[in-house]
Image 1 (cartoon, rainbow, N blue to C red):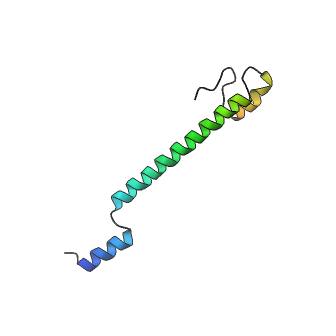
Image 2: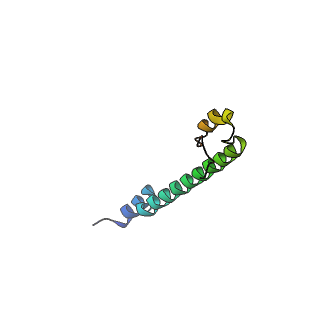
Image 3: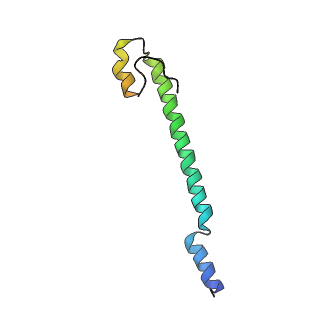
Length: 75
């Protein structure tokens, strides 16, 4: 049988229940990935507007932004 004092100390040491912490961390990671993806897409759309595929001289810049060389970026 575990004493009340031990249980209380364990909860304080471990930060409480491990499941909510893991869930919160997974949610935080999901939010960070979504934010990064949205930012990448915004940058790619801006680069697509700045370096249109119809101008051959833009091929290198489009490659740097991972844009298609022969068509518009569609997300």
